[in-house]
Length: 399
Ligand SMILES: C[S@@+](CC[C@H](N)C(=O)[O-])C[C@H]1O[C@@H](n2cnc3c(N)ncnc32)[C@H](O)[C@@H]1O
Image (tube, protein in one colour):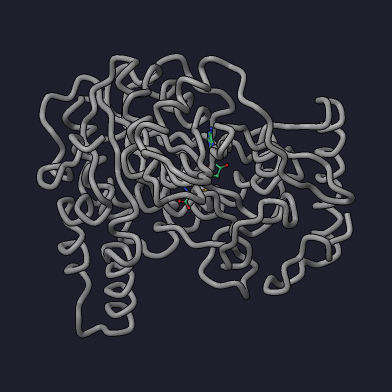
């Protein structure tokens, strides 16, 4: 592919090796589009761009997570921002383990391993009894990076960590996933004068372009009719549906026979998600800490993500018979869980440690940053009481 064709001027150019990798992936996708009758639904394009073995964004070797573009990273997540995130999350995890009488933790999409290392240390510091910490990630490439982080940051607990290639049929314990649901492929739909169409991908010269096709399946037309009613749409409207994230939630909640599953991510309940004013959808790409809306830039080298529609996630979990344990903002969850106490453990006169920690807490809690956009949703089986982290400000009724 001619890299210039899809290189917005504002984005830094990748090196020749990365470009060659992107070109190899683009060629695979072009072949798949041709084999599928010259059109692919967007979720299939997104799946290939993110997870194609060896070449996709999470399947290949790019840096991804970090604080600055200079280190080659594209975006920062809460566990990368501050160890206080994991130290605080350890509290509801410990409470859920104790309340369900279980002893194992499972993390989906563990990134660099920072959250795992922080949770392991946090659980030990709280005196929580636990046996194993299992990691499940679609990205095999990240496994070595996770292992190195855990060995460096939690050396005494590293022997309890294992990586799973397949999910067990049953799991008793606590499941965690930070920013995993937003990394699942979405389908795109556009609404205009002629009704709904599904937005897919076609080959366009050396690159790709969008192409809209009529919606045929009854299941889709019913879902889209409910979105239309929800948003009282009028005028052009682009949005997403989240079949993969819902299926994933169903799988996890079916596997969970006792314990809790907590997912932290950015998004909204359905009535906010499908609001008429959100007419451009939420699809977003991240490359070197710059956010933009073109998923065809450097396939495999940039992250592609969409906000989570939490009402659909709640329905998917509850359909399996799991209880909805709580749903609230990240700020409320972390405050309830005691993040200010965790910060208070750092000596404020030690300014080199305290000031960056206080700044990070501000980012995690601030309404203008991550505090309000990010939510925590949790499901449970066999837990009678609610978690302290949901004790006030639970918004389950808004789903
Ligand atoms: C945005 S990253 C978040 C990484 C990390 N949790 C953090 O907060 O820094 C998303 C991660 O979810 C993983 N992922 C996506 N779908 C998954 C699935 N179905 N099962 C396991 N991991 C998945 C990706 O491979 C990737 O590592």
